[in-house]
Image 1 (cartoon, rainbow, N blue to C red):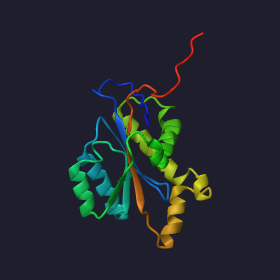
Image 2 (tube, rainbow, N blue to C red):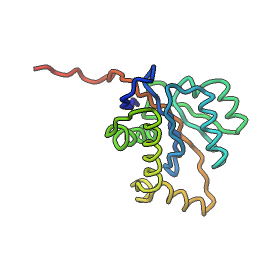
Image 3 (spheres, helix red, strand yellow):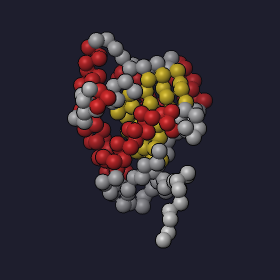
Length: 184
């Protein structure tokens, strides 16, 4: 999934990327980070924060980005007793929830904005994340917000078992497989 982050500043050497972590069951957005690039160390830091707050999930599902399949991350996840499931290369539909989440992020937050800096982007994206979790109802959750749905299930003793970790590149890429435009 390619999300274009509109920055007015030319302070980035490369187009920034967005790292997202979402809960498959509650649909909560647990973390969104903006950076020039992410390493497995960055991914461990984000996961460590979430595991500290919520406990370790049973599974972590991600694509095959180098920061997600790094050996040190795999060892760290094994120590945390978290199993991994990676989607096959070129098969984004295997990670449909993350793709849908990225679509909402693009449509509702990134496309309407022009960011003056990475900090500006981070602040607005965090605001959107708070709205997404606390105020945006989801049809798949019987029109509850993710936070309301999570609160209901937590009182019953259920916990999340699968988290989706994904990196969204903001680099422009050609639309591979698209039909060529017809010029009349």
